[in-house]
Image (cartoon, rainbow, N blue to C red):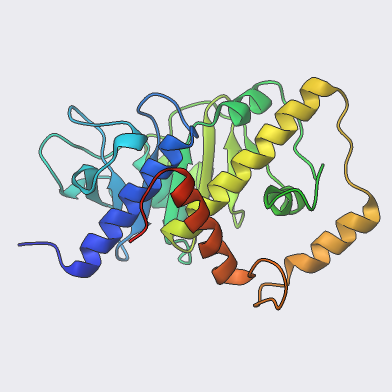
Length: 253
């Protein structure tokens, strides 16, 4: 049976997010995957296997459906669930509000974890990664493939209510309430870890002043529409997504 229009749109969203992240160099080789929760026990995810492609080359045909046992329920014969489907499954199991999960391998994030460099607020007005630094970005210390239920549950328990986590010598995992939200947050995290990496290369990075940190924390709760500057809340997130979509050469509909 042919996919419904809604299902086709969701599949294309997953594929588009993969292409954006791949084209903007947030991973290497053919590694990484984006997912979207379809139901209480299934998700859409970029497939792996004999016919897999890198993130930047993902098409709707590369997106498969997987159940919460990690088994494929729909998709081409040449594709199979990623071994780390359990990252996505358990982050969704632990938090019903999570609709989308992204796992990629940004170079600067991996290097910071290898050298055990702390991430903290070193900028405010520069970019949206500042908000992640204020919330705190922790590192999962095991440097392994999350390839079964036990490891997936352990990682999801570590991540808890956090929206992002680094993974030592491995990569990052990010959650969102939709594909666009998760994509923009992943790019904000990459901005933050890249700035941290370069700051450590230059010398001894310092946190922003306490009064600015307090003001930033206060503004964290301001998620409504704004009358000046960039839009806040969901509208602001979608505007950022449109920018990154254009930057990656993805034509707008």
